[in-house]
Length: 314
Image 1 (cartoon, helix red, strand yellow):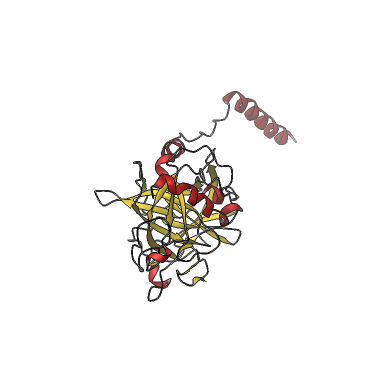
Image 2: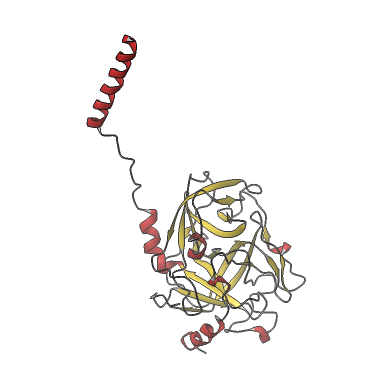
């Protein structure tokens, strides 16, 4: 079945998106035994290629995001829209658990975001401004700006709950534990909200056999294939360029229904579609702090001197 003909089926699967309410989230699942959530954990080493993927902590919940500048994080709009600057942090685990915890100072939600429902999943993308830059040496990820072809392999990195594909979730979210897995962008589509034809990618969570295959193409392997579950919205999806560099190609934002087991799936935002908007924020000149008006300083200085002279006379 062609990708175009599969899109109506995909929309029908969006019956119970867990991201319809603010605060819902996703994480990365493992395969069936002998694979396990522990086997998917990426150690908190400074040398990890995923050291620039951090957790977002807010109101007792955990989300994910990836650094696209030393002071900007790319994540999901439904995550950023609920953050209160000064009351949320971006956490890095680069060389140890929670090695850096940086306050969030501002959020930039895509102007086309109108919330998420079964017919509208596009434009769910946002940037978070950090109160201070992260240390030198932490990976900063470039954007994948080319068209993402159907069948592209995505490497996903995220924080949150996990479990096995045949059993479901068994591990709670943890802002100091990130997991890694892969899936394939089986289809791309508009996703509603006035977005273009390539705004959203969709994938399914293939089990060990074809019985759980929803969209075509078999599993990447029991120890490799992953999907989304409660605990980590905004997690990045990467592709590797010809030079071996990891580029940020997607932001994972939704899954099909409440289950995180084989036969399910999800999707996210195709970063190339939003690259111009992202650039516009990252490259915008900083708002200068206005210099004090000299004409105002002179009278204030005169008042200060007059008051000082009056006190001496007393």
